[in-house]
Image (cartoon, rainbow, N blue to C red; front, side, top):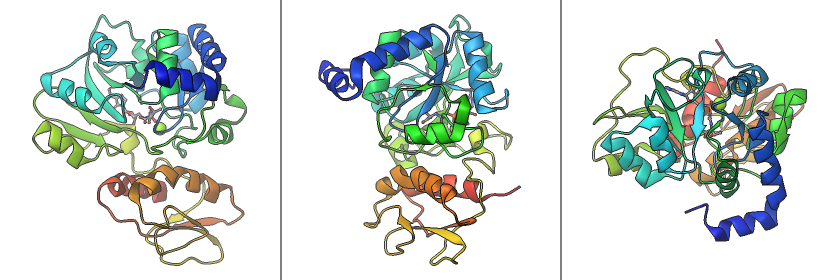
Length: 319
Ligand code: TXA
Ligand code: MG
């Protein structure tokens, strides 16, 4: 388990136990803190404190109909907040701690601020694997609401610098634990019974889920927005972005993959997990460059490539 003593001792050496204790104190006092997870940095607040939660929406410029994920230290904590059918439990047992978010029915007695779920009777729960985040959850004793720590609609941050660039002067204290390892937001699924639906592809692939669930995901019932991360334009840089680009014009910052070198390469070895972990860092780099446009080399659409293709399509879409 990631919260083991070995991990905590190692964190204390690498990131400073004091830093974690200070972050816990700020969060208990109702302040926001940007926190590391294995996927992307989150903008965290106490999920039971309405003013603190309001601060998340304000800081991100996030529409108040877009609900937040609540982060818990383990399944026991999650069971106090949501109702888990056997399949939800099975998936949590297998993939937690890790990059899987489960949308389940909210327990009315959970004490979660209604703004967290945007008034829905469901809640998104995730038990992150990052040892620093694990220790923060345990130290603070809080259930932390945390969306990605970027301006709403922008590119998700995988380093503390990205958080500063995206939120600017509104950025709160940042618990800096270096670059995030997985680099793409968690897979989100909803499961209220025997079936499950993928709301957002991510590091846990459809094949991974199918192996544990013993069946394929069911397609979303209504085509309406169940998860605004599903909006056509999201995770977007400020510049036009062109996909499947084998070469690029001098006006374009070219993000390469495999044999297509580019100005910077997602993975020269053609490794999809490496590409996923570097995608947002390279989009931030391209956005900050002096070229007015971005072009991205083709990336195969299987395994981790599915989530990469999903994020690139939304980054490229202009309404
Ligand atoms: O990896 C991650 O999931 C990161 C880290 C910080 O944990 N968090 C993250 O949060 O990506 P955010 O807010 O950027 O994306 C959460 C997504 C949103 O698209 C939101 O609409 C969806 O989760 N969501 C939250 N609650 C929901 C619910 N009750 N039903 C359906 N979708 C929900
Ligand atoms: Mg986000």
